[in-house]
Amino acid sequence: MTAPGVRVMLVDDQPLLRRSLAMIINDAPGLEVVAETDNGLDAVTIARTIRPDVILMDIRMPHRDGLAATRDICAEPLLAPTRVLVLSMFELDDYVYQALLAGASGFLLKDTRPQDLIDAIHRTHQGESLFAPSILTRLIAHYVTAPRLPQPVSVRGLTSRETEVLTLIGRGHSNQEIADQLNIAVKTVKAHITHLLSKTYARDRAQLVIAAYNAALVHPTP
Image 1 (cartoon, helix red, strand yellow):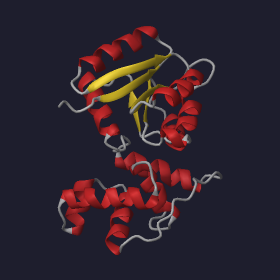
Image 2 (tube, one colour):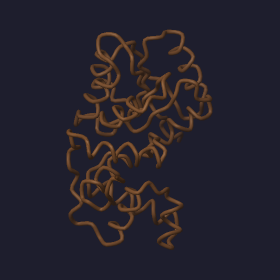
Image 3 (cartoon, helix red, strand yellow):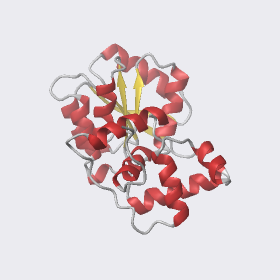
Image 4 (cartoon, helix red, strand yellow):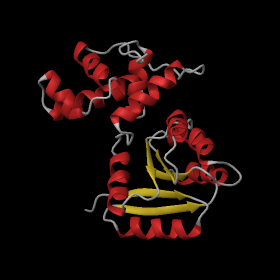
């Protein structure tokens, strides 16, 4: 029996770009575009109805922008399994920061190569964060010192090893770097991360970094 594919929703106000994205995604094994819309307002309504696995979300759109739509989708309990991957023409720190604040699992530029886009969708669906570790750490370091602090994520009940892994995640280390530093296998690191996501109720790696800062396991660089 063939495993079900990743169900993708496209949200962008440029019809030509949506068409191009749909062709790329539908041609890729294991991916399927199940819905499209051109504004953030309809995106939230449609997402609640079809519950896609991954949403490719533009930022600048009429009626309701992608950041506001992402915030609503990520706050919706029924859409907890849904991941949002923000697409933008602009590599602006503020956009990346706001996407993270809204709950997005990743941020890509619209000039990303097709194969990189396909890989990004699969990785996002698997729960990875598509913010480079160094960028993620820098953004959250600013984020937790901003007037509006993120909602705390509980780290109570973690084992000492899980706390070590969470600390290194908060410092921006990759899975391989964590494995090397703790002298354990990468698959063991991934298992610890799975436990951390479950115990902290975090959506993804980005929220684990936030949890590490909130728990004072790491501190912003002055």
